Length: 237
Image 1 (cartoon, rainbow, N blue to C red):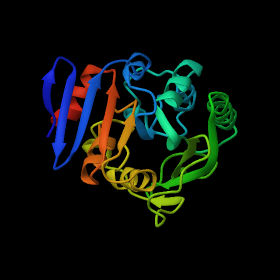
Image 2: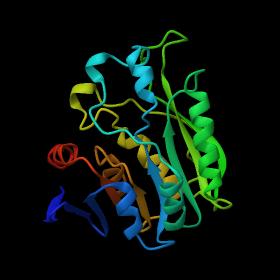
Image 3: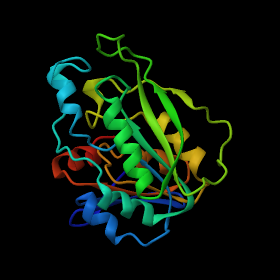
Image 4: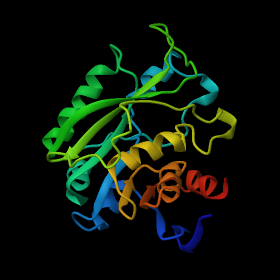
C-alpha cells in the first residue's frame, strides 16, 4: 500500500524494503539522485516514434491507444542514468518487437546509450504468450535491452533465462496501458540485484517495478510525471 507522505511523494514499505515514488519529470528527478547509488535500472521509455505504428493499426487495438506524453530518452537523460548507476550495474530498457519500422529506432537508441557509456550485453525477449496484432506475423513478444554501466557485474540469479514467458494483465485490469507483469519484472530484478539493493524506474507508470522490487526484498525509486496515471496506480491494488 502506497502512502502519500508529501505533495507528489508516496512511500510503500514491506518488511525491510522501501519504495519511494516521486511525481516529477524524469529529466529533473534523476538529477537529484546521488551518483553511483542505484544498483539496477528497469524501465520502459515512452517512445514517441511508436505512435506511427499505432496510427496504421498494426500492433494494437485503437481502444488501447496510449494516453500519456511520449518522449525519447536523449543524451541528457542517458548521461544522468549512467551517472546514478554503480559500476557494473545492470540496466534493462524495454523495446518493441523488431520490424522494418522499429529496427532503425532501436539501433539508434542502442547507439545513444553506448555513447553515454553503457555497454550492450544482450537482448532479452519477453514472450507475452497472448497474441497481439500485426501483418508480418502476429506480435507476441517485446525486446529488452540488457545494458550495463561498464562491464556488467556477475548476475545475482543465474536461473533467469533470456526468454521470459509471462502473460500481461488483461487490458481492463491494467493500471497503465503499457503495464508489465510483476513476474517478468521480478525475474529481471532478481537477475540484476541482491536483497536490500536499489532499483530505479524513471518511467514508472503502473508502479509494477516497485511492487516487484518490494516483493523480492529490494528497495525502489520510481519516477512518474503524469499525476492522473500516478493517482490510479497508487489507488489500484
